[in-house]
Image (cartoon, rainbow, N blue to C red; front, side, top):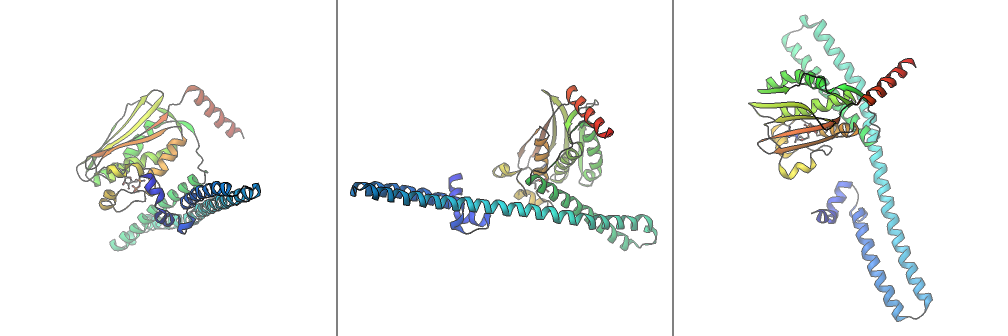
Length: 329
Ligand code: ADP
């Protein structure tokens, strides 16, 4: 299957936004064919002409040809890498610029609703509430785009510390109960009641957990059940979110953590979504020293899980000392 994909130059050219003869796979294949033809020709020439000069010239022509094609492959790969970098920088700058006006819209609409709410008609109030809701949604999208740009540029910086994962999960479940109720979904968190101290960036991991649980609610249709759990295993903590939702089709499961991926059944069922949440969650969890995985069956449901390293006394002392030295500075 991979070979068929590699040989589909038209598809590759479309994906990379370049002409077909410039795709690295095409140039690579061309180089292979030219090498075989050239070697056969050199052999033929060497059999035909006894003179070593002719042989040297023939070999030089082969080397120069291979060198030129190799050079065009490198130049094209460099050009694509440069364009990719420019795109990430553009997304980063545009997202930064959008943050300020969006915050202003949210601030002004919240002010209107709280301070002047009484003087507004129901229609005016509902209009302002819609603007506020859309501004919140856009702020989330802009912040996701910024995180993606940071990941792509290798600039996602995690502020690691030892923190109680169970508390964060509990708070997240609590904040999503209203959303779950609105979708007729029951959300259960089996907490152990004791702190579960892990290493990682607490705020970024809160986002990842929120994404996994809200996906479980979002992709579950009526009479839904979402079970969240946290347990310890071999020096790690395993978080799991199990739902009885729409699931992910088998043939699309390999793409789940890809940027912008949305499964066909999810798009039909839930039109809203960016396909960025799981990509960001995977990067945050892996950079924290953990792993993320899932099991899913279309029409039955999904279980999304991740592991994080438990905080050892040595690590706890390290983070306390670091925080102390920052405080002094
Ligand atoms: P979004 O939800 O905004 O589309 P995500 O990156 O969070 O983006 O998820 C990517 C895709 O993975 C979703 O569009 C959906 O197809 C699938 N997915 C994620 N979580 C679930 C789930 N709990 N049940 C079914 N499909 C899911």
